[in-house]
Amino acid sequence: MPDANAWILDLDGVLWLGDQPIPGSVGAVRRLEQLGRRVLFLTNNSAATVADYLTKFARIGLAVGGDDLCTSAQAAAMLVRPEERVLVCAGPGVTEAIQNVGAVAVPITATAVADGVLDAVIVGFHREFAYESLLQAFRAIEAGARFIATNDDATYPTPEGPIPGGGSIVAAVEYATGRRATVAGKPFAPIAQLVRDRLGLGGDETAGLTMVGDRPSTDGAMARALGARFALVLSGVTKAGHGPVDPSPDCEELDLEQLVEAEFGRV
Ligand SMILES: [Mg+2]
Image (tube, rainbow, N blue to C red; front, side, top):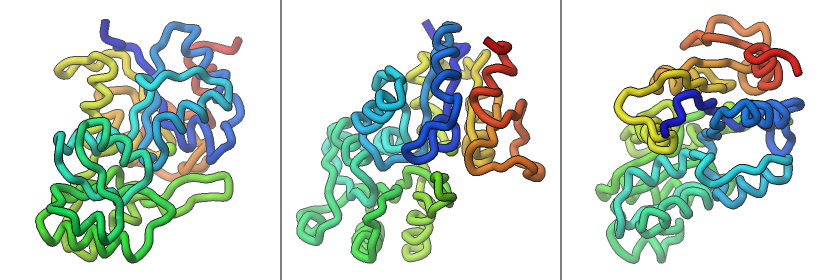
């Protein structure tokens, strides 16, 4: 049975900031579930493994299953085939996703890279990014490997304010190689397909989907790509008093709690 009335929630800036849940967000998710809505979590953050995420959900009091989480790491892995050798210029979430599709995840070490032809390079957020990563990604792409990015977010919201996001690392590799990456995460086609698969939606079936996010360029554009309503919340990168945004949201509230209250009334 397709989940046509699903709510698709971004994580950073909607459910939490860093390790801190956004006040009221956990109760709002529980309420959506009590109302019988399928809740799918959708993140462009590719660094963490699925187990890391499930632990983090559990820590804030949400019982979330692996099927309820879509990451840009998983979307990027949809672009590689079994047995391919893929250079990981990204975090453990990407290594895991590559292995889950039966491909070989090659770490950034000169010996691993020298071991054979690389079919693809996946670039994503990782705090260990250094010149060696840039060098190995550059060499692999120059030698003909496909250039895949998990996402192109310039920044990433944290409780201490924004920090450079995966897109900033991708930009370094793009600048060095003069090539554009194929981006897998929001709002692009691979992750849209991942969401459709998870919700059991075929063709252009979209009725009743709601996409909640804090960044119009990714979450809003994703909503448009899915034919979903775009609900903008101001608990992440977009602040109250912002100017016009593109795409413009179908509804806007301070945070997820207020959005759910505006939709279904106060409890
Ligand atoms: Mg966000």
